Amino acid sequence: MRRDARTPEEAPQENDELELEGDDEEEEKGSSGQRRYLTRSGAERMHKELLRLLNEERPKVTAEVSAAAQGDRSENAEYIYGKKRLREIDRRIRFLTKRLDAATIVQPSEQTDTERVYFGATVTLEDEDGTRVTYQIVGSDEIDTAGGRISVESPIARALLRKKVGDSVEVIRPRGEIEYTIVQIRYV
Image (cartoon, rainbow, N blue to C red; front, side):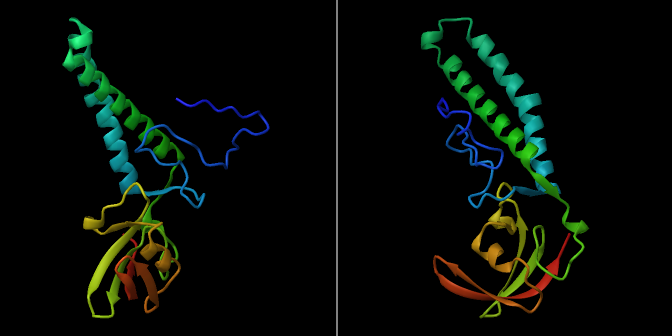
């Protein structure tokens, strides 16, 4: 664990990006320093995972570690693995708690300006070849490309924001540049 050696004047302010422990934990704010958003369904999925970890996984692993602790701990693989798993669960619980506490929950169906693309929109696009694809713009914690949910921070989503039906956008991707035309915008 690293200690912060800054003086009170140099201490991070509320708007500064926070450093978190763990390789799989990202910064509290996005790389652009913007506020984190979640759709209502994404927040509910994260909350269910948090409750499952707190009420099922953690008590189960704690009981296993307690039982394994009865013998010689130095060569007890069950005890060592159990403690490692408990640390992983606790790290994930802290991560989910911080994300849910800091997130702004957005209900896409409550969007008033349905003529333009904003966070939570489900957008149908058509490329130059006439191929259609549909994406929902969600928070970075909700990404599921196979399910059609892309991050608001992705190049496609950034290009689409504030555009209307009929507008064309160019997106630079690893395979090269592609042009999409917005066919439909829905807020579900």
